Amino acid sequence: RVIGLDRLCALHLNDSKNPRGSHKDRHEKIGEGALGLDAFRAVVRNPRTRDLPMILETPNDLAGYKREIALLRGLAADVEE
Image 1 (cartoon, rainbow, N blue to C red):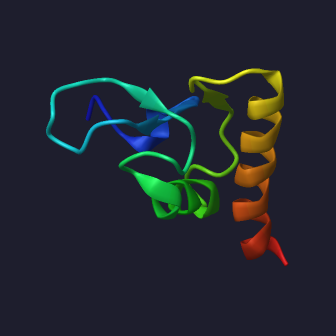
Image 2: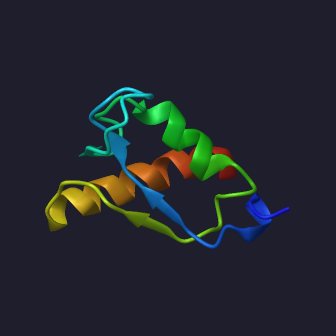
């Protein structure tokens, strides 16, 4: 009743330097960490989440963010064609 996808307003995206269950929040670039590209492909293609604003929180510079945004758009574009 309190938590659900209908209450989700935006997504915060980052891959993880550590595996699930490590109890550590160490950010990695999209597709270069323990989550991998399949996890992000699932998010950007899921009809329940694909239209939500997505905020990158990865260790990067402007050129790196540009590459990550292009990567995520590419993952999403495969389903739209």
